Length: 327
Image (cartoon, rainbow, N blue to C red):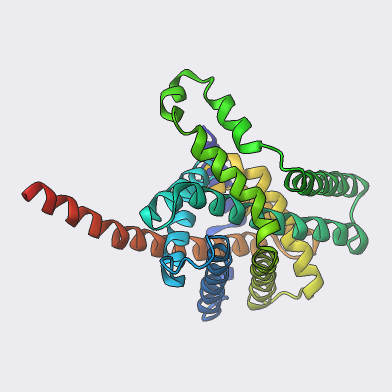
């Protein structure tokens, strides 16, 4: 249902703005689209290295190219929305195979996703505060911005408290899911693995502070690349926007991604949100929509690379199974 509503919104926006106008604005990016794709690749590489730092120290079995490939596979599944992100994280853990213990794989994926969410929340908070201070927003927009900023700040504070006090969040979720009849059998016997993963998660910051802060810094660097992407796309389309304004733009984009997470792939809501954000900077709706389209093209391009990685990773396993059956 959500997918149909999102698709309907997307079609409505295209018709309202005009396909020819949107095509003209998107083509205005020209060769710059190659730069946007390259920035996306660098961002994925940075995040892959950040994830690798959360894996067991001294484990050289997960090379940077392999970590990048597995992360692209996870991101490809994440294009399907919230359910896809959950699936992608599960695929990332399972595809590590026996090279990394299951509990360590779960804790590393959880830490990596958590640090990325925290870095996104930081950008969102600073961006929303910047919007209230720098933009001539209406009273309603200021109230919404401050409310969202307060919500993100509460999330960060609770996250810090949960880590410092070692709240058993994963264990509590697992126990709750075991109350669901359809999941009881699937989760049976996983309590020890989940508990061990949670212990490793809690110990990571204390035992590997350098890796923790480096991973967080790298995730923040990937956020900087996203801000640069906004700045470049607006410039390529012939509009003007400052670096600080691009920061604010990206902060609002984080909010749009959160609100539209329930729509598979954020289809329609992402493009519509980009339009609304662009209007705050007196940029035309066509440019705002085209920014959303170009960023989606970048996401789909690297998702396609992720699908190719999935094929390459699964091929040896299929060949092993065929050989086994032949024996």
